[in-house]
Image (cartoon, rainbow, N blue to C red; front, top):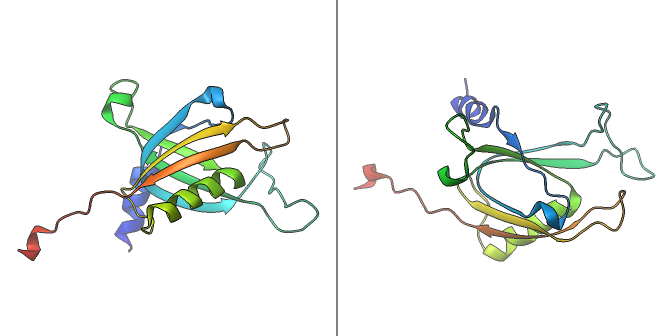
Length: 142
């Protein structure tokens, strides 16, 4: 049995959803807990295809944790789920490349809409910053 999978499932269950579609939604900052890449689906749970192809569109699902000060009461565990469309994926990818280190659990993402979508069928433009987490010191090494 893979206990990493069990731990990941335990930390990613529940949580609130993050909405970032327009500048009015503000920005979001959280610490990475888990990452999943999955086929994008519509409201009826049908897989959405790339325009003019039989290739499914890919959606990232980031599970992030927010600081205690940003939680909405004692029942809020701080877990947030953020579905990422292609435009958001591009901004996050650029931010990871700019930080100069590979992404890992414990890193921090800050993301915001920099330009609203021009219509309902378009995606917003995003800007993101990826900050590597502090390395964990293994006291067994001493």
